Amino acid sequence: MIRIDPRETDNIIIVSPEAAITAEDIATLNETVDGFIKRHDKVPNLVIHASSAPHWKDFHALSSHIKFVRDHQRVVKKVAIVSDSSLLRMARGVVDLFVGAKVRRFPESGLEQAVAWAKAEDDHPGKLIVMPDLPGDVIGLQAEGILTAQDYRETLVPLVDAKSSEHDNLKLLYIIGEGFDGFSAGALWDDTRFGLSHYTTFSKIALVSDVDWIRHSVKLFGHLMPTEVMVFHLSEFDDAKAWITS
Image (cartoon, rainbow, N blue to C red; front, side, top):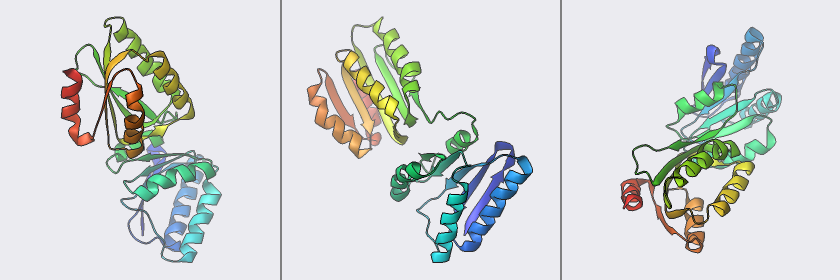
């Protein structure tokens, strides 16, 4: 069963699998999307809201779903996947390689953010949020979505340059939470370049994250940096804040 919620003023359709998907569900979805296109002369973006990985009632349902994707993947511009399912988390990267649409994953709690991204005209998929109420020598950042080179150019670099003009040494409190979905290729390059150019800028770095590969990477390479580096879980945010401001 699929619940379908067309939001015509936002140019999106929210699709919520709630039980085994049938061929009839896919037919209804196909009619909804095609009817939307005929009425508005434009293709809606899709928001897939699934609390768990969807499954199909039978092979006919699966083949119908594959045909739907094949027929629409070159015209739908954006697909937002809202789920905490680890399977869907991995599937996003695979799907992104084979479909023409921009695909982005959001946590289960991020439906509103997914809708905002899907209905937006541009495709800026992430952001760096500057944390308020920290000492002047502490930079607090929270990463959300997919970070791009634009985030480094417009947020991180100007912030560090401004703080560096006021303080000889800075401290960094960096939160990578459930809403983080990775780095673009440009962001990876800018991250490396930024790290090399600010090799001695920070006296302390506190990473707060439950993302295993990021935690392991920081622990592996942190001792090579000329600064104190500590890794905290999200549940230990208060400890991280106390450590970085001490």
